[in-house]
Length: 281
Ligand SMILES: NC(=O)c1ccc[n+]([C@@H]2O[C@H](COP(=O)([O-])OP(=O)(O)OC[C@H]3O[C@@H](n4cnc5c(N)ncnc54)[C@H](OP(=O)(O)O)[C@@H]3O)[C@@H](O)[C@H]2O)c1
Image 1: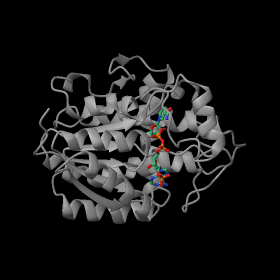
Image 2 (image 1 turned 45 degrees about the horizontal axis):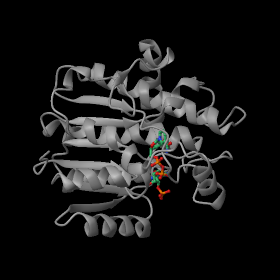
Image 3 (image 1 turned 135 degrees about the horizontal axis):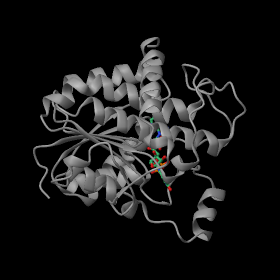
Image 4 (image 1 turned 180 degrees about the vertical axis):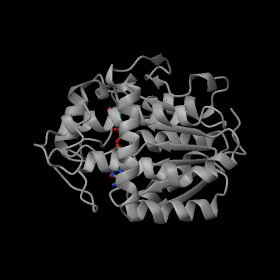
């Protein structure tokens, strides 16, 4: 795999699956842009990759997905510094157990996992299309199967359940991918959603309870293994015809949930996401 001429932007590249995706793609020679919210954690991750991948081409940019204004600021910086972006990996994700809200008043999982990535992708579109054959990879989850889209919940109006909100946000990722693919069937952009597998990461917190849980449930994969499908979709030849598809942790196309194949729902979510992001920042 030689991606030496490629520029790849990865959100949440400082931890878990994003960190290992960045490391593997850095190994292939690509310029990796690590878009992370915490400068100290980002620098630690950058130094970690640099130490294991000699000559890695790494750039760090600040990005807090819980603020649409920050998404706009980051996208402008990225477009200026990287007029051509070959691959965007919308990887960052949150799963707070208690309801949290974004700066703009959206329920955190909807706001970070879906809405901010929706806006980031839209704002980076000129740089993506300038690459000729760009790819957008959205990290979803098998748990999109438990998700429903409750349009009245986006601002936290309805009672909060952490996994209910997670399932909804991950269903948003799969629906967004489907509609993005439909809108770009004729301009070279391809897009995929991914279930990376059950992976031992910080997604459920950095505390002892989380670490113990991962140790006890030995079935979790390593983050390196969890990065497998993201790396595959960023680099493999000949997968363009599957644009819009949902891939599992073994890099195989899967059907996804019934709702995730609902084109009318995908269009409605897109229209609502456009309306919500247009009003802010
Ligand atoms: N682990 C699994 O079993 C699993 C299964 C299915 C899908 N996924 C998906 O895989 C993706 C990566 O998660 P992970 O498991 O690797 O967890 P992780 O280790 O916690 O990584 C999540 C990343 O998202 C970043 N992030 C969270 N909130 C953010 C915000 N407001 N702005 C910018 N970045 C933010 C985190 O930054 P900080 O380090 O600063 O917190 C971190 O870099 C997520 O989309 C998750 O839903 C994971």
